Image 1 (cartoon, rainbow, N blue to C red):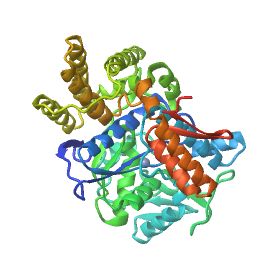
Image 2 (image 1 turned 90 degrees about the horizontal axis):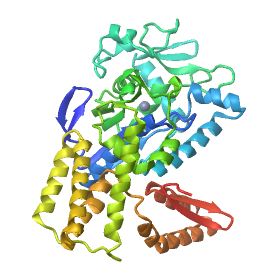
Image 3 (image 1 turned 45 degrees about the vertical axis):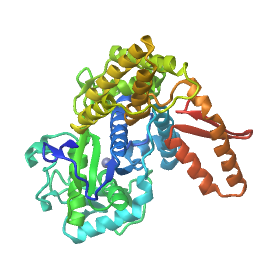
Image 4 (image 1 turned 180 degrees about the vertical axis):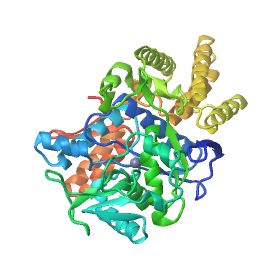
Length: 464
Ligand SMILES: [Zn+2]
């Protein structure tokens, strides 16, 4: 597989550090509000990339964090008159509702910044000892000039970076690009004890700590939106490499942004389309087709018309599946034929080429066309093969059409009832951690379990 690495600007053959294992980190949301359509792009793309690695027999260990210590969260907590944890917890739950409605599998680890404060403090102390950071009035800053490779990821000179956006201005800093590792406590802010007095971690250090603690000093893949390249990822890289002396990331992958009349969609610009609304209007598969039919490195101009067209295309595919499924009560696995291997080869070639999902999607539509034609011609064997390739192989790799048609969902009901009965038994025996782990694993499969007084219920992808 070849992937375009932001660090080198080149298409590179993917070779993980450990054979057949992919260690992957994706920057997650700052949890102070509902996520929007722009946030959904990296979720959909990197979830599909993870599934593709698994399809190619890699074991993927994926981490996606939640930023729960941040100005915007603190402001909201003060508005609501509650602790920052309450705001964060509220929007983490809302995130899971949306992710599950979108059919995004949970990462293997989903840590929060506040879970890692002691580790963050320890790393900052090491950076100070190594001469990469300095203390001013209870703040700690990273000394950018102590790290000569700074700018390597964003391919910009120091001057260009200073002119760039999002550089915090402060008289305390020795140099304009130095950034806060630790911020001294201000009134009405959550604070932790540290060797430099009470305070809280800066933004960038959290991802360094959560990724390296959970995945090791060198990650195979670090992914996120391209708006994170500078300063966030540049800073993460500098801190991590200054700390460990090892390369932080082998392949940096960045998705292009969703734009609205030239601007990026963002909460701070106030031009967002909330994901939940989009899910109601266009469905999970409509949204996924919309994003995956563009290459992840190409910007997308937000368009309701295009979303509607994709939602319609998704409905047509589901109609075709239903038409086929109505003929069989049990769908047999077909015997392989050479043309199926050719299809697989084509599919893999597309995705091996810098994860070219538009080509893979085009192939899926071509196969849907075959499936319809085979059915028109009453070619049952051919239809079965096309259906199998689509439904059991290609679509799941891209996370498409998993919610399925109604008939399939009811088929799993007895099995789910059994799982929920076992879980009830575990809860009665107070084995809550096992019960929770069952719920979380079902959630990662897109099945939401709700505990009510009358017992537990389940729904697919968060539907009610
Ligand atoms: Zn991050």
